[in-house]
Length: 390
Ligand code: SF4
View 1: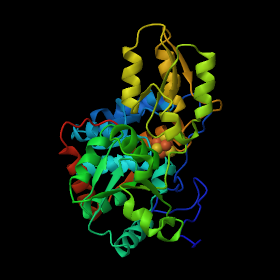
View 2: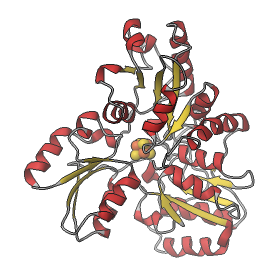
View 3: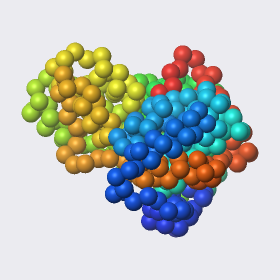
View 4: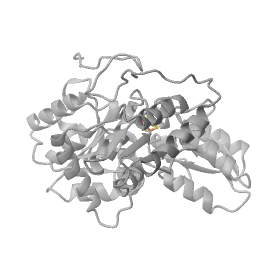
């Protein structure tokens, strides 16, 4: 096994601007025990008025989501921010790659703020640009340079989106992955797709939506020379899946699905496509966070659900729909730990700093990366009949 450049940074300490890893939080945070935090957040938001637009991802805590002007998945939120050019400041309660996408899609005068820079994404961290460039060279050495089209999930850093823009590839969301893959396979004769960074979304889409076999998919391990794949396997593959996954959705297990079916007769199992293939194949419905929300909203009273996605969202759905029986598809707590770093003290600190004219934790993508990432994003926007949900 070769050594690789994967220094581990404890969250909130040190700095690694080339990755999604945590960086320190400058300034003094209000104490979490401060009883006035809600009033302070409201006062700061009122003082900023239309100059600030607060975005709240579905997986955020309640204490934060109550201050969101709009809630949604990452792509919807970035587009909402772009549709509000009056908002000088966009406070993104989500994770780093989402704030980057918002910066790419908003106008230059809009400044995007991530209240805690340690709110990264473990999945996005699993594909670093240097690793992907090495994989690209190895694929060229294997004689595949003319046939591979890179496709990256929205949940990736801006420089990986830019890589796809540079190399004739596209961005996709969990809702339009099938259309994006069809587009990619149409780009070259005998095309293969390098799918980044979530192997599960890539595999589930290829096999369950596009009718490929599991043997059509191989997994590229960036920690091994040549991805750990013999040349023959690479040559025969149609999908080269990056060895990345979501640390939240990867926890759901097929045996829990079986147990719940035994204890909750009539239960409908509803999971996100970032879940493992053996979980997704046991589910009744598979879809993005927006899909999950709409499925519950449209269900008749008395519907029994077991839902496999982030716990904050499942808990809110259960609270909002007491007429249904909503269970969580995991035996243990399953919050997205980095998403949950955005808490009320960080939000208050970010908003109050803006009131005093100080922009803290600005997320700014460099112009070259932004230009190339926009190429890949625009290809996604141009896809036929696509919907944009994460
Ligand atoms: S839920 Fe998974 S993909 Fe989403 S931010 Fe958390 S680790 Fe990343």
